Length: 79
Image (cartoon, rainbow, N blue to C red; front, side):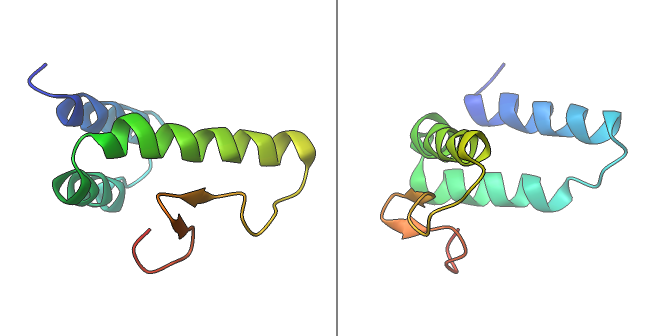
């Protein structure tokens, strides 16, 4: 695999095909975020988001700061 980004995009495409889901927007988002933030988006930001999401599922609630990643909250224009 040429890069971590290519691996993630390949995975997104496979999941999209298996679930008959259009993943075009997801691919654009990942590509754009990696271009802007580097591969740390894939190695730091997404895992942190995943951990926060899993905590929210475990507790059954979402605090307003649960998804704070890189100084931004989910729902802000840049996320």
